[in-house]
Length: 58
Image 1 (cartoon, one colour):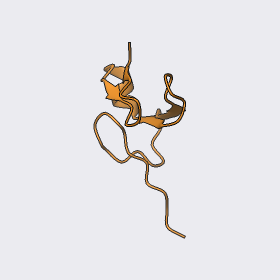
Image 2: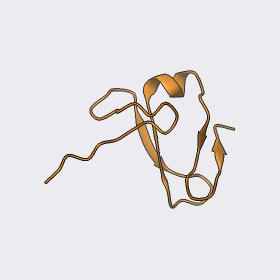
Image 3: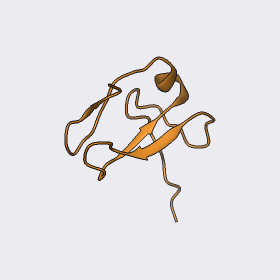
Image 4: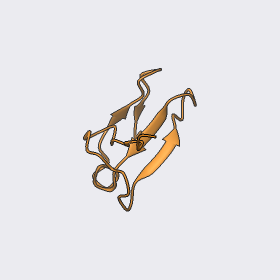
């Protein structure tokens, strides 16, 4: 069984087992998972849902 690799949606860095990261469903469509690293959360970097094109943070 392969290890699941999580990548920040904003900076594309691998975040598996990294402190301060978050994963949540898109606030607009609730279908796509948004994954954010600590750094991008702190600098309020933009992200875009792959399914509905919702952009955050707003």
